[in-house]
Length: 366
Image 1 (spheres, rainbow, N blue to C red):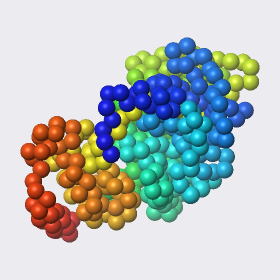
Image 2 (cartoon, helix red, strand yellow):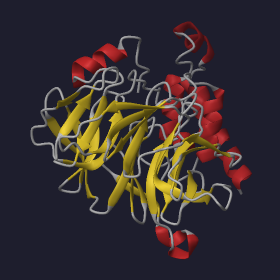
Image 3 (cartoon, rainbow, N blue to C red):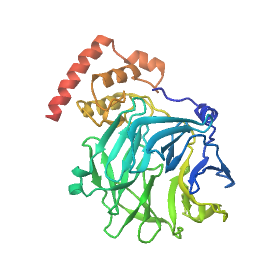
Image 4 (tube, helix red, strand yellow):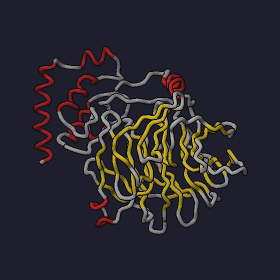
């Protein structure tokens, strides 16, 4: 629940064996590979009992999170070769996954969206396909933006945003002529990178306005997956190898080309540093303050499917007084201990404030 200090990147490397920016791919012949982002040199990684499908991500501590061949959601530590199941739920129809800023994992299968709480192992269904588009909702790709917004691509070539407050998804306002393939990722500025299904180009989409621009052309026809690096360069796997597309220009550079039966599939990039926010920093702006109390108040009373943006600080999928108490304990974090000590009232005052806030928010929501 604490904000990670300046040495987090070094600790992440020591714990996982993955350095910042390392590219990890799954390969057709069931090998796990590490690619040097500077040279493109590839190395087969020891994987012990880790047997991933081509669905993977890398968490803040630089451990690999994946769906394995037994349909389990697991976490793999490359340094220790330890494989840890994250939930008892199996995902035989999983098509993609993404990691939220809280560390919880979102999984989409070909019908629904799930959240796995990595602390408790509890799996919650966030979106049931029967409640969207008259049942004709089939998600294909998922990404979490820098502020925690969740976006999906869908079988019918559309893009959607998951709205935590309502538990529903809303279609993005894209031009009718745009047809999207399954893979999606988010830039550091919040824009989305998606592949056009018909033309094959990489597109850049503003999710708020629906504006679409061409980011890169000449993409290999048999593209499998792509991921964004820290500087928003795109690294992409295809039957021809691994390519990089510059964030500013979309210019292509071959990164790893190998004609000797090299078929990269899934791809993920180790984060530059292990960034962890305070549990009560609901808006993820680096401190715990009155704005986070407002977020808790807006979500107060939500009984299921709540995430950090709703005010769920303890990871139990609801927003209640326990989450308020976490906010109370962490108030001022990020602004200095002196500020926190001077600003936090006595516990008795907090109890009265909690009762008044709960009544106020209930009346507002009535």
